[in-house]
Image (cartoon, rainbow, N blue to C red; front, top):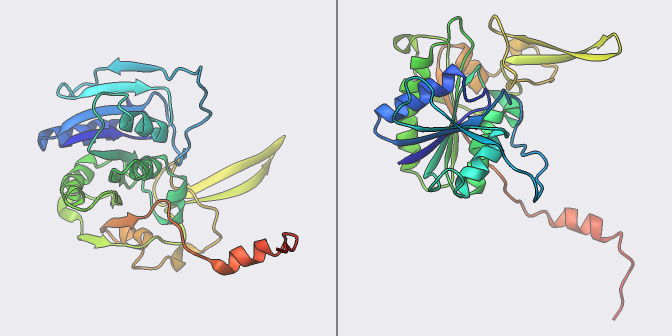
Length: 271
């Protein structure tokens, strides 16, 4: 397949290099196009778009990716995907792979993830997307995530498009992972956020399970950590499992009662 590999940590991040290399080794045609800088937490934002605005694109040659075409793009992950699907980096990709994010993307906080946002944007263009994240570790265990991402991609490619899969790998060597589980979204992710007063304004305070925190996986839900459902993505990841979560993008549900409630504000028409 022809794959677009992107991320939100920036084109120079080690996670995207590990992912692209694994996909090259699996025999895929890989185009790497990713933000020039860190766009963590960008969700599916594209920024302002104007007819006279140029998107800056520079060819790059990351070490170890000699078999891939690589670009640094001054844009958000979602905008990178849009450009790719419109043919901006050559023929449009068959599928989009986003990651490997440096830190888990679990729970309802995936709404804010630029990693996941890129995969969801692919679905809006009729292509399936795979978002891949690795739980925080020192050092990061990229081989665990890549070993799981390749078969996940193979499965996704065999499904009717578009579909979006969110894959999270625990901070364990591959042989120590307890298994892979189908998981729903937890009420919150592995990183918690709170607002505290600071001189001249307010400050975000982030706490997480590891030694550091990821800018993607943030929620402000006031839920005790021991209340995480054990069968949710956050709970299973903490227990040593890799998690797969199928996400849905834009959809519509018919609600005639909502329509009626709004329509009653119109003046009564006769005739």
